[in-house]
Image (cartoon, rainbow, N blue to C red; front, side, top):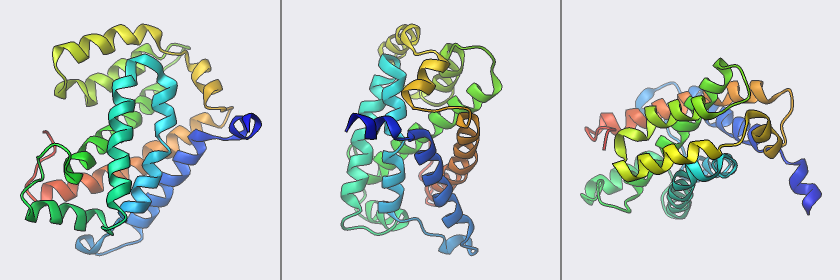
Length: 209
């Protein structure tokens, strides 16, 4: 079993999964008809969870929140086919902003995907072995505006316990292809994040709550 885990490539799996999601979206031409299945989306999102775990204590809050929200979407996928249908159902029930609603959880999951995207962009653009600067920038850009002082302080303290870039690659069982996998995730997740943002904005729900 240990050997099987050691042979897995979490970074490659998540990059491939989001590439498939982006291809699905790009293959549909009529904007209003573009659909993304809740089941396919939640499966891809599950593959991002190991990265949060590998970042350690600084992003423990993000890991716990992200995993719980993805689990909710996976459960929703048993009875709801597409992200659009899921959101429309919440709009009709007037529960979009209620804690625990699928739509609210989708927004939180999207934020997690965005944080990883920015983290990878910063890692690709930076030199050296430290992840403190890339991780701090990703947190400040994506999560910090929605967090109170206590969480921001805890994250700031946790940044000193981040793995090095090399340690992160070792945890992810990655090699020289890591940069390419990160670039693939950045490009494809950008397409998926934009699609989700459009779903919110087209329903006048906004994305900053």
